[in-house]
Image 1 (cartoon, rainbow, N blue to C red):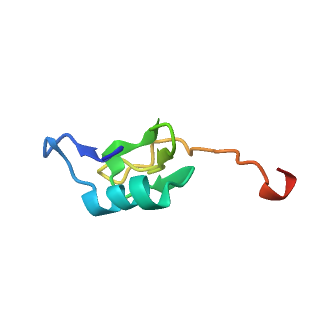
Image 2 (cartoon, rainbow, N blue to C red):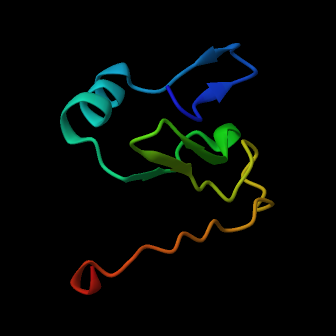
Length: 77
């Protein structure tokens, strides 16, 4: 998966079925999520930009800054 590593468990905990659907069927430009607090950040695979926008740590401390993404207005393209 992307941005779903949990160091305490030493494993990725994301949904493989969701990842396969995103990568093979939907192929969005942007996929935003935030449930896995430890995975905060941005990654890309060439087709999709993955954003784990969790602002809190695993202990629910709000320490991560917001992630801002500018998208073009589709009406202007």
